[in-house]
Image 1 (cartoon, helix red, strand yellow):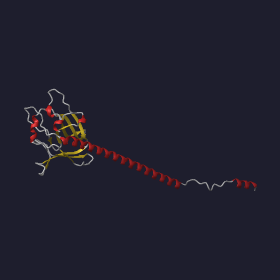
Image 2 (image 1 turned 120 degrees about the vertical axis):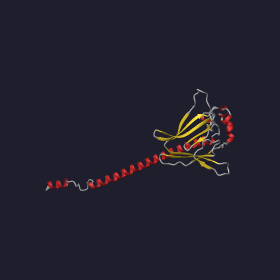
Image 3 (image 1 turned 180 degrees about the horizontal axis):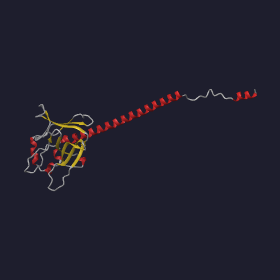
Image 4 (image 1 turned 30 degrees about the vertical axis):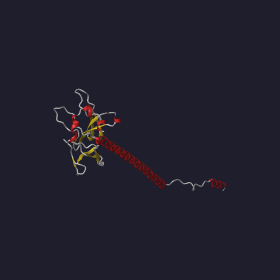
Amino acid sequence: MRINKVTTAGSFDHSHLRGFTLIEVLIAMTLLSIMMVLLFTSLKICADSWERGESKITDVNEMAVVYNFFQRDLSIAKPLWKDLPAEEEKSFSFQGSSQSLQFVSAFPASAGRSGLQMFSLNLSEENNEQVINVTIVPFIRIAEGAKLQKEEVTLLKHVSDFTLSYFSSANEISEGTWADEWLNKEALPRLVKINIKLDNGIYWPAMIIDLKVTGTTDNANLGTESTADINQPESFQ
C-alpha cells in the first residue's frame, strides 16, 4: 500500500499540457500564406504605381522639351531668302511639307552660338524606330574648302506619327485655311500646327505655333543683302 501511495503521489498530471493539433497548424500556415500574398501584392502595386509615375514624368519632360524647341526657335523664324550663287535659282528659306520643315532662326544669347541658323527638321528611321531629327547649320555661304559647323540632334524618339500643317490668310480679317505643305512660297505662314503620336499610342495635344514675323514678298530685298549683315540677329529685333 505504501508503494502505491508513493506512486500515486509521484505521478504527474499531463492533462493541462497539450500541443497544436494538425488542423490548427494548417490554419496558421494558411493565414500566414494569405498575409504574405497580401504583403507582396501591396509591394507590387506600389512598384507599378512608382513606375507609372516615373513614366509619366518622362513623358511630360519630353513634351516640354519638344514644345519649348518649337516655341523658342520656330516662333521667331526669319523671312529670309537663301544666299545662293548667282547661277542658282533663288529660294525662300522657309520650306515645309507634312513631315519635314526647314526654317531660319537665331539661338538665344545663352546658347553660345551666335548668328542665324538653318534648322532642318524631319522624320527618319533609326534602329528600327522612327525619330524626329534636327540638323542645324549656320545660315551663311561659307568659303570653298571651309569646314561647315553642322550639328545633328534627335529631338524625339519612339514616334509613331508626325504631321505638320500650315495656316495662312490674306489678312487678319479674312478666313484662313490649313495646308499640308508650304513650298516655294515668298512669305511665312501665320501658324504652324504640329501633331505627334508615340509608339505607346499616346497622342500629344496639337501644338500650334504662332510665327511672330509674317513675311511677305516685301522681304525679297533681304535676299540681296550680304550674309555678313543678315547673320546678326540684332538687325531683326
